[in-house]
Length: 210
Image (spheres, rainbow, N blue to C red):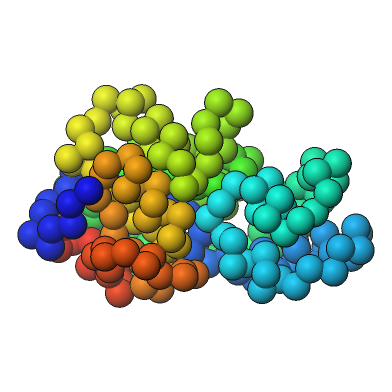
């Protein structure tokens, strides 16, 4: 995977949480609801440090009993929808995406978030995205490249035209394994990838790559 500051892209693939939207307060409320109902007593910080991975993988790493996974997931999703108003777009996000669209760029979302909640968050802005890829049974979650490769194949894209914008190490590795370029969103949740990468401090910096 190349990281060239002079490179230009036609396809901008975004992670959702921590890149386009700030959902931390929503996550904290939802995780507390899970703790309260199932009495699992796992601090939100420990959960939050795993953001970017599939939900079930996070529960597995947190050593939660597998027989509880489906019930916890249901509780979490219901709580998240209940407080969906806590999720906000970062400043300039929508205006930047609209300008990228006007420049004939394709805009894609590849996220570990459930499709139902993703659509509720995006609401009237769904039209801005050429494709939204959420977890599916036949696709491995990040850091696997499956979701990125699915989007690229479905829209018949050239990998050299694509860049993935993420905010966690698992995003970086998903892009690396998919053999596409990566930009790290400094305003996101982190932690920063340990390997070399290009980073941007503001979503407006994407215009440098068009």
